[in-house]
Length: 157
Image (cartoon, rainbow, N blue to C red; front, side, top):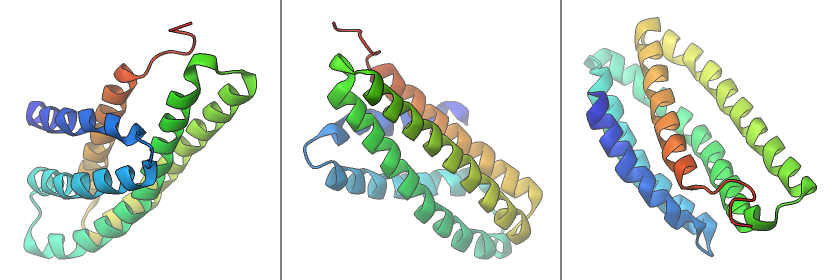
């Protein structure tokens, strides 16, 4: 199952490079819309919820995704800013990017905790943990794929 998920996510994440276009917000919206449908199918496949649990789970999931998309949008903007600055980044720019990235990571962790509690109440601790495990896997897979494409600071000086 992980190999299939990884392949799907890798295929999607390779498309993220196009977000570094002139109209970043428009590109982000298109990617998030397409990925949102794919992600939901992955979640359905992995969780295999009963009808009763699905009725409780999906409204919570939609609320979670709405909040998560805001954090993902900010993450992509940070990456875009990095791509525009990395070849001549100074102390102030590096600090700004690092602080924004760390804050974004903290906000995602807070979001996971907030929604873990809601999922646990709505379905079960086991299903909530399974979702959290899957969501973390998805985020890490995409981040790793993107990270492999990003140059290190001073790499091309």
